[in-house]
Length: 359
Image (tube, rainbow, N blue to C red; front, side, top):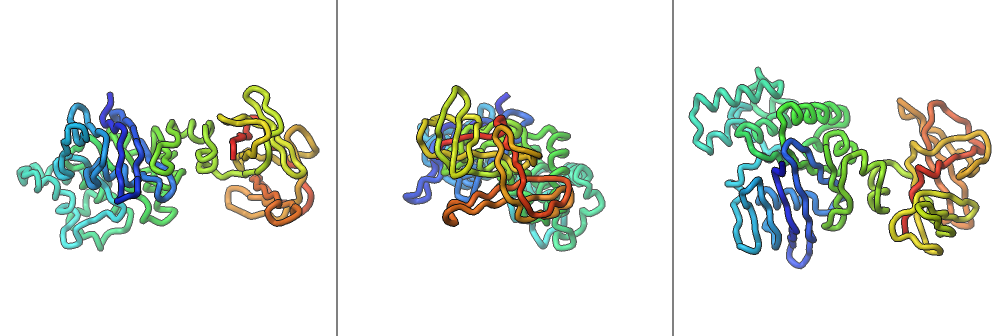
């Protein structure tokens, strides 16, 4: 069942168009991440749904309730949309206790005091903060403050939870722990949520579906597996994952495959849409898909290993071949399980893992 629907949404900042006809749907019990680089429109889209930004054109509905419709000129104010919002900064009241912060939305809705206490304590228990209700925000860790902000957004049972980079203020280790906690909480409570993030690992870990935005439009959307394993555009292929990118020219197209070649190399891969023979193209392969072989084979090349870098669970290898000038240098990366000494290596780029897109 569709919980939230956004249709052909346009939004400008002055003369600058930020959203250019965005349409999306959120199913009940689904988590959708808005992913993209800075300036792509993901936070603006979230704020438009929340009613914190005024859209120029389009329609936003939750179930059968219209929140915004440019044709009928109807718009529900942000405070009446009953959406749960977790801001990047958490925005906790410093002079209020944890319990008072969480209870604030109930107080605004004039819920009876006894029911407030019951619902707040229930949320505290759900978040693992059961004994911290009388503390103040400055007495909590960053992860605990984040949970309080989530609790405040959940306490009045909103139909949709909006998360604006909720983990960005946490350090790397705590962020991983909070990511797992947030996914488990959303699944356990059966929440419908939209989350803004610029971190693709975060989006893939938490989301059922990802919307990748680029310059105010949805570039591609799908499950995390689809977005990572089957990009349909150069932008999506480059944005998702850690990649090797080789710039060359299309020399052959054979059905769903294409051959692209550059100075001293020739690769076969999966042809992207709009590819034509003779045009500049980018061949892309994920770093983890590039393999070290023992001899030359199909889709292979020989390059000198420059250095090995220890990453804890694996080693990263850097290969570099200098061309006629700095712009012609060929740089590739691969992963392995042991340190290697510099020297010539055979690299294999399996054709099924190479994508070829127009540059």
